[in-house]
Image 1 (cartoon, rainbow, N blue to C red):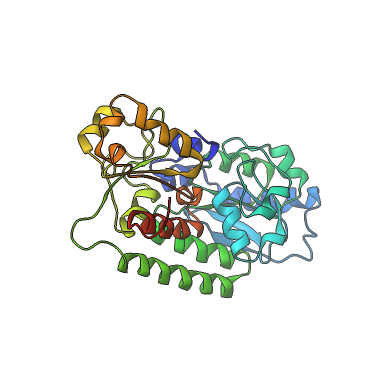
Image 2 (tube, rainbow, N blue to C red):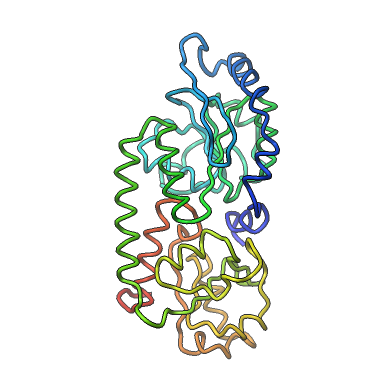
Length: 319
C-alpha cells in the first residue's frame, strides 16, 4: 500500500469533526500562537495583522491575514495551494507531497501521520494546513503545544472539496483565483454528470490496495466522486472508511469493471492469474483500468482523474 492510501486506511476518522473539536482549545491557543511564534522569529507581532478563522472541522484558529510561510501536511493540501497560486509561499511539505513537480524540491517535514515537528518549527511557518484525509486528529494538540496555527481541511465529498477550496483561498488571500477555479471545477463536474450513462450504470470495484483488497467504504470521498461520474461503487455500502474486503464478497458483488490508481498497475494485471479473481467476468473480459493517483486525493486533480476514468470505461480513451 502506498503511504497515502495507508494513511487513508488508518487515520481518516469516521467523524472527524467530533474528534477534532474535542481537542480544540481556542482560548488558550490564541495566547500560545502569538507568544511562541514571536519567540521563534516567524513574524514581527507588531507588524503582522492576525484574525480568528474557523477551519473546516469547526475549530477557531488565529492566523495572519496574509500568510507568508505555509507548511502543508497533506498532498491534497499541497496541490490546492499551488492551484491557488500560493505555491511560492509553501516552505515545507510531507514526504508524500509529490505533485505538482515543484513541490518535490521543497523541504520535507516527515510523514502525514507523524510529522517531524522539529523540522516544521525550523521552517518558521505562520500557517500549517492539514486534512482529515490522511492526517490524524492528534496533530491538533501537538501543534497547540508548539504554538503553531494549524488549520484543518475536511472534504468528505466533492461538494466538501469545493467548499474547502473556497475556504483555503480566502485563508491565503487568493479568493478571486479560488472563485475562478471553483467555477471551472463545478462546470467540469456538471459535464461529467452530463456524459454519464443513462439507464444501467457500470458497477465498479475500486481497489485502493490489491493484496489484501482495500476498498472505499461508505461515506468516503472516493465513492461520492465515482457516483457523480455516473459509476456505481460495489463497496459503497461496505463499512465506513477504507476496509479490507474479502474475495468472497467481491465475487458476490460481481463488478463489471475493476479500477485502481496507476501505481497499482502491475498488481492489478496480476489478478488475471490468481485463483478466484480470474473467475470474475471483469477479469476474464479485461475490463481492468488504471487512472491517475489523483483520484484518491480530495483536491482539484480528482476531476482530471474522473474525466480520464469516464473516457476509459466509455471506450473513448486507451488504457
